[in-house]
Image 1 (spheres, rainbow, N blue to C red):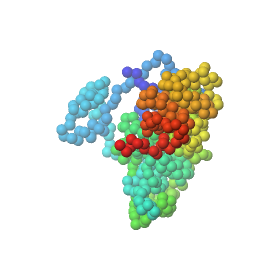
Image 2: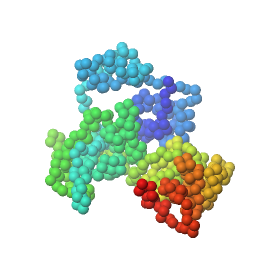
Image 3: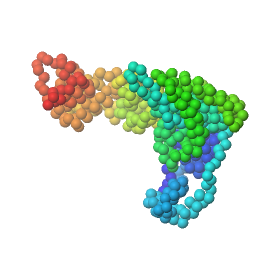
Image 4: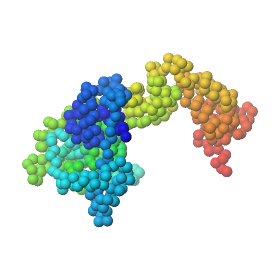
Length: 512
């Protein structure tokens, strides 16, 4: 079976962490959730192809794959290794045997190891295990992040409700210097914002950030193939650190933050247990004061305190913060419509017309929208909040719609005419009402496709009603059909009754 090649995003991340961050193969493998052999293979191929970082701006996914994997070369997929910790855990049950576990393994992996190899691999692995391993943390290398299990109640004085504030904790591995804050939730927005403020608190960036397998950090918390959340990865690229999630149900991987959370709960949550807070700003002022006391408190068995060790060791080793603060960006997969626009929060943004019917990836912040195709940025717009509006760049339009596009106004009108002359007239009016012809294509298609749900006769009648009421647009025609107004004859001389097709009118069927 041929091995599936990695996406350009994964390959780019491997090259960035190796050539820019100078991480080891092991660290890169953990950060990118890849096998070490795969990372080593891709780095070797990159050296042969003489690739350098950053990759050229014109490098697309197809060209990168051609450089890394010449035509005719095949890749052999390695057999899936058994899950050794799982085997050891299952064998604690006196009724479970290696024979049973091997049979279950072969059921899921048809081309897996034989029984004798399976047993030998497990025995070899078991002989290398130790009860625990003391981790040595280098200055400025790792930052451990997590949320505390307990919360702080925030009371809304007006509504009388209580919101459970979530305590975010970040601990540097070398100095144990700690940052903490209370956020309203543990969602992506608060998770990313807490990271940004933590890095600004430390006044620098570590080499590696170690989160738990939370959904906001890891999209698929799988032991063998977890994937980093796209927005979290975007944050890592902006601040130039690597994300290496702790293994699921392996607290020793992040012992620093586990202890840090415990200490923060004792120093902060316990100290504030009798206080009543009415806003997150108020509680974070109190947390900041207690955090200062905690970081300045002398160690019991070591000289100095967290702040002194941080100033002496971690601070000089941290990388400088970038000039621009990270702005939260979200990602969305979209399909380009026949009008060469994509929809985001009710607004439509143009892309090059050659991408019609293609899948693209949108990256959007509060102020901007970027659209990518095969990891290459193809469009950039200022974010607009105008519902139903269009943001169209001139360079995205085809020189001639009839020459470059399968869809034309005449074709849409002809298609609408198969339903009836009123539908064709509605299509003409929609197209004529838009500043650009292509802007009306989406609404025209919507009107035509209503026939799939209501039939040609009803759509034609609804279009006739809409034309007499001078409301020839998709939403009004759809409301006419939903409310059954197409079945009620219009009275002569009464063609101005906008309330009868208003979104908030239930219609007579509601009362039957």
